[in-house]
Length: 214
Image 1 (cartoon, helix red, strand yellow):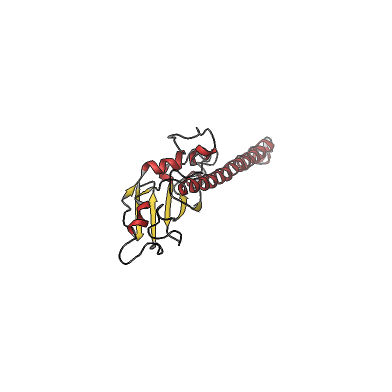
Image 2: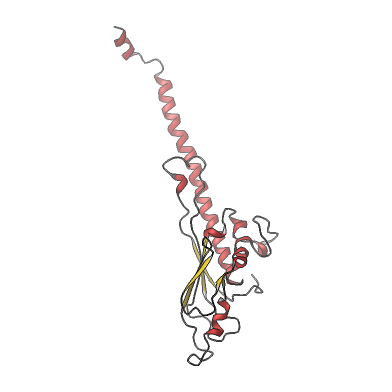
């Protein structure tokens, strides 16, 4: 009879039910907090990218020699004042290289100092130290952003002209790469810790000059 009584015994059933319910509720609550933090990180990354594009548009280009393209394009077959030849220069902070397709005469390499200006802000080499908006960089908005997470593309889209004294006026796009969300409670659950922030891109176009105002 003992096995029968044991099978019918309901002592402690409430405790078991409460344990299961509380576990589910705890995962739901903590998961909700993590997802809210993820949305905050996504939004902060988007704002940082917007600022980075603005800084890149009024600073020396990461593609060293890019400002020389306008003069280099001038020649016997291309008179000054003509439209700039097509080019696309992609600078990857992870590999510290710039690659170019199209007209690329004078683009000689990767300028780490120019990338640092975009990441840290003008006259800075660290994050979260900007005294004003003028000196703010991308990592002042989102401290986890590093040069390795940034890709900058300079593309000729019809602005500027051959022989222009200030150089070409490319359209500048900045995007993030390989920057994972930071989960606190769900990092070990269903590989949430390996999810990257979706591609965020911002585009701007203006004089490429470190003396230009923000």
